[in-house]
View 1 (cartoon, each protein chain N blue to C red):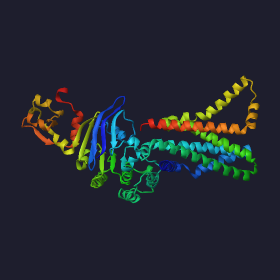
View 2 (cartoon, rainbow over the protein chains, first blue to last red):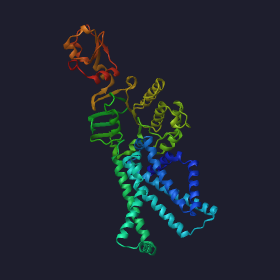
View 3 (spheres, chains in turn green, orange):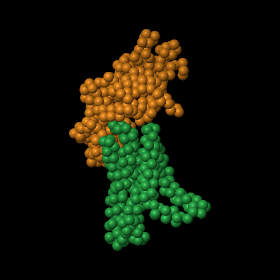
Length: 222
Length: 286
């Protein structure tokens, strides 16, 4: 447990130079423009989640550019500690991202004068946490397997994959002549089942992701 | 107890193989690890530290297997040829990043080494010279009361003054009989000063493992005019090379009696041993 804590600190120190005021201003500017033009404050969550995912990739990029994996491995910790430390760090980044988004959303809602329904806000928070963890669960094992530079293009796949799945799903539903509204109605009427199933699926994917990362990192040579 | 025990280490690459490498690093001594470029020194060090997977063989640190006892690295100080630290870090960030890992990290020792090496603790590593980066790694390796130092080319990039300073530090370090050092280098003059044992690797095979003085006494440098040597004698010379004015080569000390008295025999140094053994071309193969 101590080594996981130590690794989180190491990761934080690694990406600290990128946590600049300049980056914060860029984020505020983008979400400000988007919120005003779309009259929608929930866009803040998507923009922040994207930023959070980029920061997660910085941990791998920094490690690769500065040849830090041999440093990790010559410190008194195991490869498993390193992988678990990285996942915990990612989880902390996710929590921080959502918290920051909440604060920004409240701030912008006050400044722009846009109101929102709490139930909608909770749904947006849930969806964004879900997306963050799903995308990083897909990306991290690839980074651990091939390193950052070889994985850059592939790591963007979940974003394309999602659009692809939606298109394919739509085609299948059309072919089978299933009404999308009926499915949406089912989801709305069975929120507990939908949420529970989604959470179980996420837990399963995260579990697989962590185990694959450990397996891949065990095999890596430096 | 040995600090490092390696038995029959094998690692296969497409064009290179570590071939049943076996040697020990004795507690209380400095072991120099020498060999020409590409001989396998770094591969052996990486195998010891588990940075690469061995194909077979047995490696023990303090009589234990590192793979299942990573806490052993608490007692190991490492200097490898990697960049190692983020370019955006300062030496203070380095301490923050790694000190918590070590049970015996000593902040005062670290700061003392930074001062000794004239490293500005607030300057980012990007602005450090190659030598300064090496010094920073050495400062880290020496700041957690390690019982074993594994140093891969620690003197490369250091000026003669800094090299001499490092030799002094290592001599002081080894005065504690519980400590030991495995020191790989091309600059063998450093080892001549401080090493007790030498492990010589060539083409992935250990060709000498023993006391430094034994290695130096094992060989002699032979010189002479071109006409002062017979062809039978030439065949016994390792790395025979001719110049306009004469020839030189390496012979085993025990073979001296087989050469005529007109020839000149001199003591060799480690550099010459590496150079001639690396050629290892006897006259008949010319």
